[in-house]
Each structure stands twice: as structure tokens, then as C-alpha cells.
Image 1 (cartoon, rainbow, N blue to C red):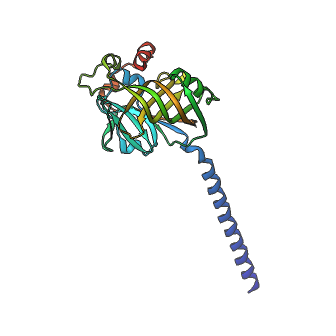
Image 2 (image 1 turned 90 degrees about the horizontal axis):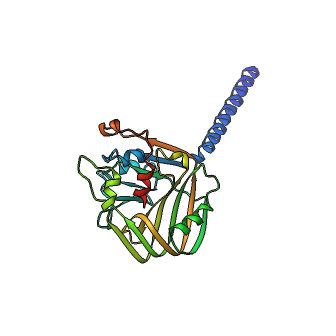
Image 3 (image 1 turned 30 degrees about the horizontal axis):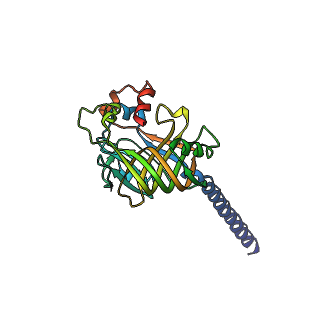
Length: 269
């Protein structure tokens, strides 16, 4: 009887050891996934948007599963989009913001699960150029993507939006020639957006792309200019990039081999 008992004990010890090994492996695997939230998730390419690919591709309910902070636009280019705290806001052509329906679709958007890696306080920022100079100090590696959230009190903000387009869609550069612009004075709000490296120029805008939303979340748009009395800058270094492409006929027909740098520069101003 002793011999079988010995083998049963040996089997038990080996079994427990195997379980412990699996648990350790699972813990290690979970640890290796700790950085998986540092992914920039993008719908379509900027070049496609520039050429009028405005049909929505995925719903906002789907989009916010991939990130809780970001920017984008709407089906038919119907306004500027801001994703903040997991909610999507649509700034229409009159400058007013409304919370978007989750079933609505976006033709172009960029989001990430935002977790600040660094925070700094800024004050007495005279213009957008000075703000960008300060943000540059938070970019240790120019070959990474960075997500920004700037919460502050602004002396002045100038934004733009775009009206919904009808088919056949015109290029974005044509749309922005008559873009409505909006000005805000002594307003609290949040800047949301990204800095993309130069090698991303064929899929996104190199440098800064920021949108603004007032603290009451009732107005905003694509940022054109600002001056800030004081604010808190939060930055999230993003080491991963994931993009999905539109599956429609228009996207299949456009030539994306040419980077439209001059047109993009005009659109962003």
C-alpha cells in the first residue's frame, strides 16, 4: 500500500507544479500585454479624406471600444469630431457641439485609450505656435505617436468646422475654402489631438492635429489658433499603430500614391 501512496503523492506534486507554472505563465503573459493600450487606432487615411472619401466606415459605438480620446469627422464630412472621456461630440457647421449618436458612422477618425505618461502645467501661452513649442518638449522620441489632452482657461480660441457634403463629394481642399470659423474669448475647455511622426505623412498629418471642446461641451471645432492663460497638459506616448481601411468603391478608385502636402497645409490653416 505504501508504494501506490508514494506514486499518488508524486503525481499530486507534479500536478501542482504544472498548475503553478501555468499560473506564472499567465501572469507573465498578462504583464506583457500591459502596454497594449498604447495603440493609436485609425480609420482610413488622411489622403483618402483629402480626396473626398467621406462615406462612414464604422460606427461610433465601435470606435469608442478602441479608444476613449481622439478626433475625427462624420459621414458625409458632417462636422468636426472630438472623442473625450469615451463620448463622441459633433461640432456642426454652426460651431455648436452635440453628443453624437453611437450608431452614426465615421469615414476618418483617430483614437486611443488615453493614460497620461506625463503632465505639466503651462501658463501665459500667447499663441498656437508657442503652445506647440512647449508641447515639443514632451516629445522625447520624434519617431513615436503622441496623444495630447490640454485642459485650461483660454484667453482666445479660433476653430473651424465643415458642413455636410453631398455626392459627388468634392475634395477637402475645396470644402475648406468656404469653411465657417468661430472665435471664443475667456473660455474654459479642452484641446484633444495627436502628434504624428514625419514617416506617417501618407496616412496621417505629420505634426500636431488638435480639436477644441468647451468645458460645457456645447461648442468647439478644429483648432486654428489659441492663447491660454493657464492649463494642464497630459501626454500619452503611443507605441502601437492599427489602421482599418474603407471597403467602398470610392476608396478603391482613388490614387493614394501621391502625398498632397500643399493641399494638406492649406486645409490645416
